[in-house]
Amino acid sequence: MTIRLSISRSLILRSSRSFLRFITKDRCRRMINKSSRLHTGKYAAVGRITFLTNLAYFAELLWRTIFMALIIFIFAQLWAVVYVGIEVQRLGGLTYTQMIWYLVMTETIVLSRPRVEDLVGREVRNGDIAYRLNKPYNYLMYHYAAYMAEAAMRLVVNFIVGSLIARLMAGAIQVSLSAILLFIPAALLGLSIEFFIKVCIGLGAFWVEDTESFLFLYDKALFIFGGMMLPLDLLPDMIRRISMVLPMNFVLYRPARLFAGYEAGAVWPLFGGQLAWLALAGLLCTIIYRMGVKRVNVNGG
Image (cartoon, rainbow, N blue to C red; front, side):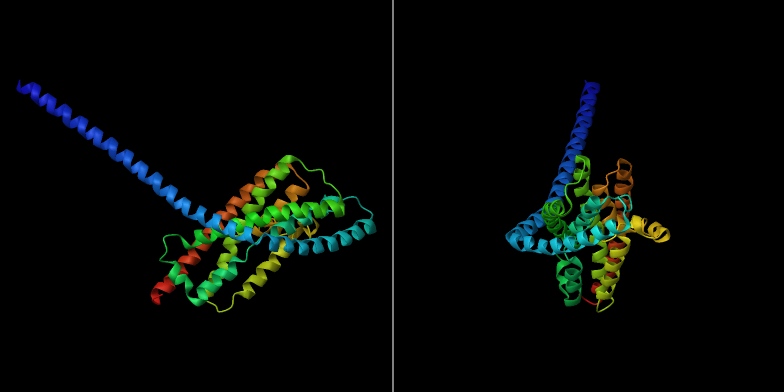
């Protein structure tokens, strides 16, 4: 009888422990999933609010495309003279029609960029960043969510309007569905890389009063090494090789080149390079941000 009771107690204890262990693991898993959903939901809400705010000023966004139309009109005339003058069908592997569509795609990306560096720099200089540090969200992720929501809206509008402009000025382009579907995510990844670069510039306000000089240098580097107005294929060989490893070409040149002259072999190098530069730029931005936050904490906010 004693043996049976001891065996029963042992079985009950083992079953209880197993049940508690199962309940604990299940509860922890649910808590983690709930925490992840809440964490992601915060930034989704930020993006949604930003999107709706910009939607309220949709007419203003359309007016900005007039500037794009003016730029494309000027360069369409310029490149028409170039192609006729040197009597060639292709430059840098692009026909005249492809060249205009390439320029439209670079302008589509450039005009989709919110000026996050101004916002971050202003918050650092006037001390607003000290108040944001106490909020229940990550400062960088908050701005990233708002930035990408606004950039995505601008990108879609600029892409549609830019395509109409290119169609009127240079004619239709033979482009595959794959190129169209890949251009949007490639452009968004490029804008993500630029977000972290621009935020690094804005965070420079922790150490210098005016960061405009850094922004000026970056914009000029984007103009040359990003292929903003001139495809990298037309640059001198040494400059082209340097440009091909810099982040600027992953922001503008490669996404635009993918659309204007789609090559299946260029897809993986494009997205692989973008992800690598995104990770590197994000890491650098995080380091600079933490260094700056330490200055805020040391100085008492």
